[in-house]
Image (tube, helix red, strand yellow):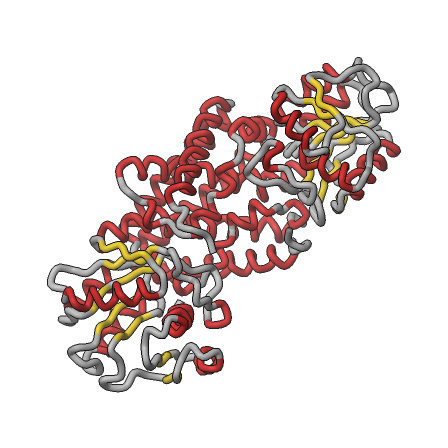
Length: 275
Length: 275
């Protein structure tokens, strides 16, 4: 995601100088070679940037903010790209960082790293910003301008609203896909199930290819909202199982029809133009 | 699926005459207009075909076979495209139809009907045939030749093996996706969750766009094998929930990593060339 943002900002000539900071020198070398970065660095120097964008797993962010605080100038704007907003917003408030603007681009893919990066990743995608009360409006405007420059739509909302919504629309489906792949892995140990796999399962499990550390952090950061969603989904699934065993196939058909209707609405409501 | 097969057979000039039978005259008219069918009909006439392919929901097939039996000649070969093989194979055996060859193309999409048809649908896709003992080998050879003519790979196995494998690789994921869409539909009644929907959820829910009647029939026909798979998956999901509540994020990370590994194996093992 960081490399994609660098590529996208470079493509629209948003910044005169883009520095990438990563613990992996090969990632940095590749991003420099492709022209997305002016240079790579192992760590941020003092007064090094007007805008700092954090693109790490969310668990690393509170400590990272604490490390950054003495290094950045008072005028630097900081934002992030994490999938959970409450904890990082709280950390920024405790550190008195009024120019930190929590952000989350609803974009990305199961692959990560600069080899999977795309300058078009954010075009027509929603980026959610969740500034707290007391957040500097000028910092919010800077971050909004950055995202709009790379073609994204900016939505400003509350961190709690964001975290609850993504628990349903993103975190729950990831858990379901991880659990399904994990479950099928055991079945595949005893049976050759690969000939019976179609495109449906492949699409369904695409998000199970996501980074395990990133998703551990997401689960940890959003556990309080994710756990009840998971329980409620499990109850729904158990009801399907009871209908199956009881032979109540008419009620299953009715639920499938409701599901299909919702999926059609979802496609229509989120059709912002495909890449 | 029926229209796609007609289109594919026409494209390779497999048959001198292709007749489509459907209760919807508009579907037939479209398939005739596109040149896939020589003509459409509301019902099968006596001695009407060398090969009869059933492309209805699986629940309709046993009765359909019983209706067909007096109409078809002794030399006609019958096959089907249903997702569950045990019940239809059993029905054919009870009707003494040794030239019925149960089949299941592992292909298709969530959309159905001739407007969604594609002559390339079966290219490099697996078609599973599950002839019973006593099935005429010449009939199996005819059905195999038909599928190979449209570019598919034919796998011959036991109906019980097929039904157990697809319970895991197809029917369970469909149930999970239907249940997720059904669950999110209620959340969407109270909250505007669409801005928070990314490509991950859209791919994950693609199979929830499938036909409710077809999937009611699949659930009914394969309930005995699907129910325990659903229970076992539910237990896996409950274990994820317990880890989430207990704060055992290291074990979640380990499961996610196992899931990702399996998904990578799955992609590699099932990469038969994409459309």
